[in-house]
Length: 244
Image 1 (tube, rainbow, N blue to C red):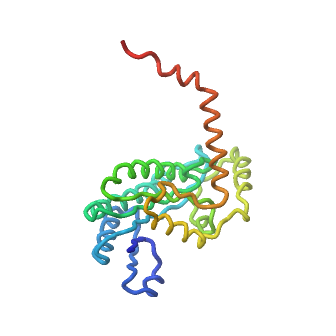
Image 2 (cartoon, one colour; image 1 turned 60 degrees about the vertical axis):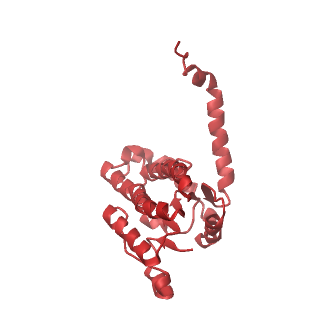
């Protein structure tokens, strides 16, 4: 299996020689993304797995968010992913195979207060990837959305925040208090799970990572179903009458 990860550290290249190609890349630079993908393809002769994990958090209450910073956040998290996928697709279609892995988050499944534009960007990744999976299956291309819980990846050091409003400080403290150190996972333990998905004959569309995720998702989906059920009469009435 040949893998292209456009964010691999130089140490891997030094350790493994031509078996790994490392390239500096800002995924917000669309032309650079296309060139990096082409370089990877020229170097290996094909692409089997394409993973784009570039992303950072821009966190704040919705009222606090600065539009220019939201755009910059989406340029990396959303449009960076889009550029990598679009650069790889012609190559994957031509070879009739490949596996695209997009990196979402628990924040792409469950919105939380003061999640700011980060959670919005990850919800976009979810929808875009689901649409992509339906579009490329006939070409032999597989898609998996990686949905991690909290892991000790150093993500927190990349988080940016707008100037805060005191009115939102209580909810901010509550959200921060909900992140317990004992709930943080070991990123090295995710390797086997990701390779299991890549090696599977029928890989999952969604791969949640973390022992707390299933219980969380069951609770969230139960709450959503309860909401829809309680409003079922109103939802049905909104259909109106068929045209005669």
